Length: 199
Image 1 (cartoon, helix red, strand yellow):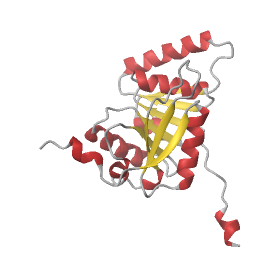
Image 2 (tube, helix red, strand yellow):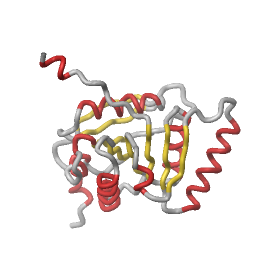
Image 3 (tube, one colour):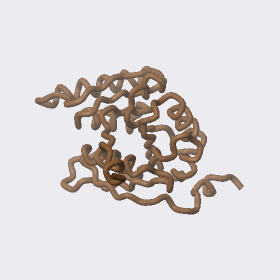
Image 4 (tube, helix red, strand yellow):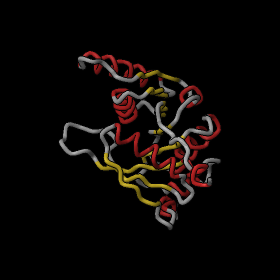
């Protein structure tokens, strides 16, 4: 009886919020749309969103089948994350920016939303401890966009001790759909925020 209760349908990513429409955010949003996801790309700068729109039109024109998914543009984080299964931020990799965006997404997104951040310097354990959903927080290190190389790029998927297995499975499947190989790693026990402190 207990085993049957433990088996639940796995969570699947279908809607992606991308926060930040700079070069990396735009390219990631286009890759997600090209892989069949419904993407909402947000930026406070209208010029970045216009550039994303032009990039989308150009990539659809170059492709015979067009874009498989859908890309929408949003001027607010709230509009971007309203129905998101996963929110990926492309804000600067510094503590203040990451904490601010994590807090905003945590307040505005539905409980199902996974918070995913590309970060080379910060501890996902520390970031996850500042939100109400630490079980739905992950960080990625590595190239999230597959280029023309034959081998799939490898990314490290870092997670806090509190993470849910369903979160890891959903992010694994999502990144694999983008042509990325995923290697899971528990976040180091010693927080990395120390190296960002000014002494």
